[in-house]
Length: 117
Image (tube, rainbow, N blue to C red; front, top):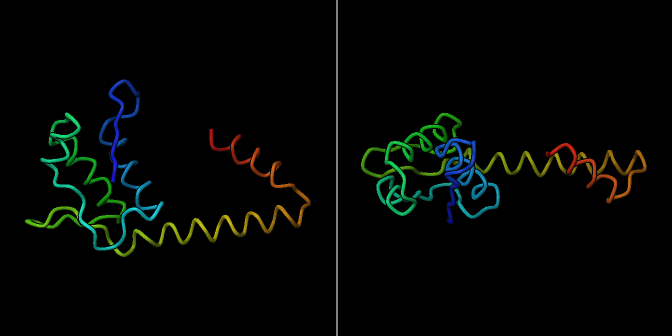
């Protein structure tokens, strides 16, 4: 898993870290039962304070995506994969509805890009 943070971004570093982990889970790069890098190691490799990394991990814990286990670190939960399954189901429903309404894939893509901003 590759984590990048941008110190010049207005988004807090802990939130950027959590977003990177969420993205890795959504893309299937991290699966249930996998351990995240140790907080000290990750903080050192990113040049962050360990408390920044721990805050990001705690945010993920509060969202139910990881369990924080003393001595084992942060572990991806089985629930984490559910989010990807729900997203895929939602996309499938969206595409079905767009087709029923006569939208082309380009029109739907444009609509999504506009909303995503």
